[in-house]
Image (cartoon, rainbow, N blue to C red; front, side, top):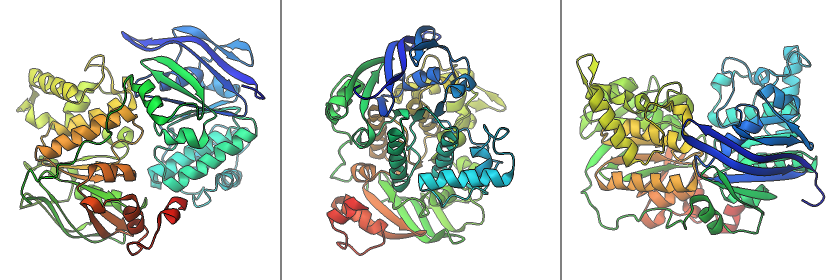
Length: 513
């Protein structure tokens, strides 16, 4: 790459986990003053490669060259000592420490020994990130997932990287915070930092990439300069075929009468949720939209019994349901289930097998007395694995052996085992590749066509438009507008999200926000 220096190179890197070949003969080059974006389906080998570069795992074959010298990083500390810093999908935040303590934890003994010094350093980094609204004194356990992601990036900046590796760095961020990170990365590029950036958002290639590499089935398919390939060409390289229409067709004719499955009346929770009433009918996908932090997540948590002191009523198929706890809701024969926002912390048991993760919520359905019927458990789990096309080696492998997209499918499978009448979804495709997204969209539409009711929160306007029959827009804890059918457009969603009157925002303004 003209004008830039080669700082890191991998040659014929290979890695296998048992019989699964995760990487095969991968060559990759990183240059100074450059952002190298890596895309590919879940399980394509992207995360495996960066974990090898970061010293987290060891390759079975191949070489790494750093500053033209052959190196081997046997641990993340080895990589850090060479100024290679990684921000992984799995956050490494310690919840019981403050923001400042988390940011300075690696360099704490050397440079930031006092609480005041840690706070000052955190404030400096957040000022650079333009994220001054995060209080360095706050406990991380009190932060949202989006804020925790920003703390993770701030922690990486504190280590003053020469090579910065980011794995789905914006998947948990709001649109505004994503833009701040893009500006930060461009500044780092000007300073000479080399970056490897894994993403599933193809538009980010156009925004920040200098170079893009596409991975598929453990190999690097191609590397090209930004602008040399369009999105359709990139997707075809990623999945090995042209991508058909992203969203399945919505049925124009009604398959079911307006039979209310979920009814919520006058729901309130302190100042966060205000007099919310809604209905989800049989076979309907109802979206929840609005700017981040307007009560969407609180609403779904309250319906699943996670929040305490919630006021209001909820009926499922005409029967009043207690919202006192998730277990009370799951035990109800007319079940309602929830797919959480953060699959790692809230949806999975990471040290347990795929089999146990899928069957754990349905133990009451596959047990006699206190004993689990193992043959029935295995039969039902295999049925789910096949139905959702979860790519696994064995159901007895740990959940950590799966890619992010397949982990998300396991979370879906776990709750589908209950044959729920209503499913609550929180941003279910966050951090998932385009091919797996399409599979999940088809699955959700098929569930709806078979009578399941779905209440679906997404921060992605395209998902609300492409999937939902109705969209409820929330603002400051209230539902301020309901969009139906052809009313579900970018402009209408944005206008309602800002709590403006219809037609008061034109396309030019909308694109600049």
